[in-house]
Length: 220
Length: 246
Image (cartoon, rainbow over all chains, first blue to last red; front, side, top):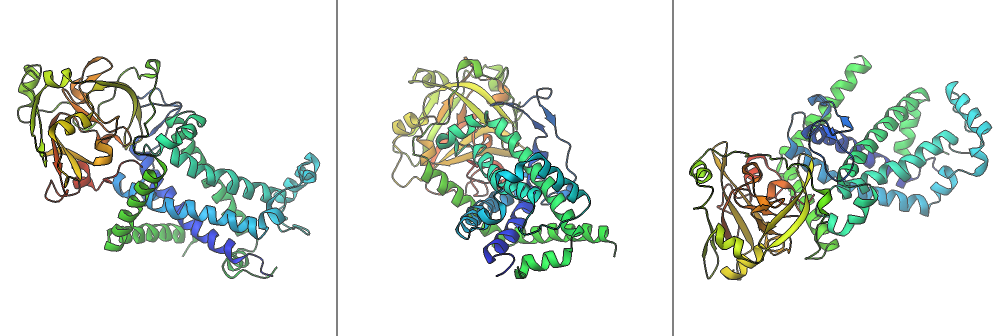
């Protein structure tokens, strides 16, 4: 059996491309109005909870300020991103990857066990024993797959005025349209944080083998 | 090459690649298709007459931000300001059997709809205001729109950068119950920055569709030959998406 299923590998790289384009075009969109608010409405300086810095052009797609082009990329890549996530979840449930490798059990949530796991991480000891992932990995993957990525889709739907007549309950649940926009931004940066840690840990643990296995599948 | 330099070069190459795709016919085709799918999905999930949320009076923003043209100085507009818009006229024409010329008084005497709605700018901000005016469907029915009409064009008095502002919607949004020709904001005549004396409210789309300083409403079969043919000022000028419900 392969270390990574074909569905996992396809989803992983497709999702990477989507998230990178969505994030970089999202930075351009953020530059369009650099204030975040809570509640339904917000437009005035002084009422924001966060004054967002202007992201430099080299971090953005298309590399200069064009709200129209950034929105074109953002609304295009939203499709493979959202449908890919749906596919990834379906595959992960069907082949039991989620239940076997990512779902945690009660024993793993014991404080002493979590402490041991953190200590091992700090020693850069990534030996998982019998399971595929250790607790912190399961937690990180579970949060990203179960919360951060889906919340990008839901908060994105909530800030689309054309969706609101049908999804008003979602906007209300998120605390209003400007709150939904703030959450969209926060979850994007939560994903960015995961991305940095994920890449750093791959680089610290046999990076070439890890990347090769995510392409070819590797051996279990 | 140092790893850092490699990463910066890889990032720049990635953005350059994206821009190559965006500038190609293939890329434009993909963008247009994605926009159509979003519109299709919205229309599939939302019934024709489903309403944008309406808010209680207490939710109204303390003032309503103006954007784009906020004080037009071109053409006859300044004269209309000094006349308090007493001689303003709205033409309803194009593919109609009964073209209309309406004064503000005519418009104020029609049955009115008042709605407290949220305005979402493409840039990201939102404001809530109470708008009053007749439904566009009333005017279109009175003008008797012909069967071959597919779009409604909104003509505006303001020029930005030397070109006249205009916008367009399809018939589904034109006949939507919340699509009104507003002449009041929060109970008062429209302020100049918000489009005095008349502006459109297209509540299920972003702010740039809500044409201000409205002078004409025109039924057409196609957007070709109007402006640069993309259906609106920002669509022509900056390639904004024609469907602004996303």
